[in-house]
Image (cartoon, rainbow, N blue to C red; front, side, top):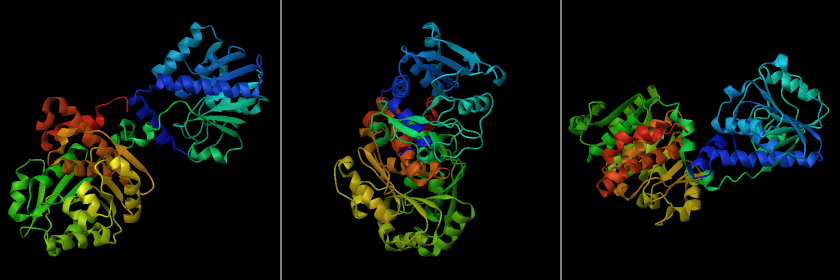
Length: 474
């Protein structure tokens, strides 16, 4: 079972793996043609009603596979408004092949002929809401016809995730959906066929550029980094990377003895200082009030150190806080024993992972199931850092293989924590962790040819925006 949003991400990931969308459209169209052959003998009259998106493109391909049938294709709208290059190419292929195909500019020109099979390819899984003209009139005519109606991916007007329709929808007899069943299809009074169109399992298993779809156009919010004490660079890196990932404002809460040093790393940082040389329980109530008052996403841990009073303060903070937090470095130690209402993303390296109760392995891919079990036990998202990162919320688990040997340098984990926090303000914990891990590694990959093993964590900062927004095909 796969949601429409996730399916769109997997499509993009498949293309990044070398399986182009045009190839997937060819497979989808072939699957639709097979379904038509199941319900009608050669020579039967087949009417294809197509929209201007990739759903229509699938049907254009199907028409080419139905030479033994009397096929006509009816495009709702003008061909010059077809929305994607690959759908447009397949429309042109129909015309050059002299397959009966017409443009229907508006509902007044729509009069579908009698037929044995009607193919509904007006709207796909990514379109929701009430049908508009001329699709509404086409749906009325399809529903009034005596033909067997075969819907491509989802009946037009039906929400693929819920099975509900906002008004009129196509009443399909059969549905050919692709790769995996959509949640809402089980509620329909229709025979559903799930067609394998050649999307590799890796497009779901490995985080790819498609996983940025849910975060790249909806960023913002505030990030509150609680870090510093023995170390100053770590909180500064986390704060700067959260800004690069789209946070509107980032604040660093740090001891007054090092606040000026942290501020000196970048003029963009806002440092809120408190008395002392490390975090202690005395500061916790004020920090919780600040974070919750402004709905901040917290980064807890970079540079804090592991003094007993600091760990006690970390534990107290998590017990009191009920918002979003990325927990990193020394702060991870307290997570297994803390009861918290906060939504956490824990970002352990391999050594920290074992301290959390997780598996010990050089290759985290081999113990991905154990990381999933740990996440389920903790009740939080775990982003286990390794050559290949493993991200799990206890039910879903994905692998991230961006990154390179140069990123073994210190500080890249602090950058990662900040990226995840920057995305966490508008995405759920699992999505933010997956996307953040991918972006962190991708930013490093953009640098590796020039920097090799001389790459610095601070070098990543300038490449984070490109790693998130640089691919127009996402």
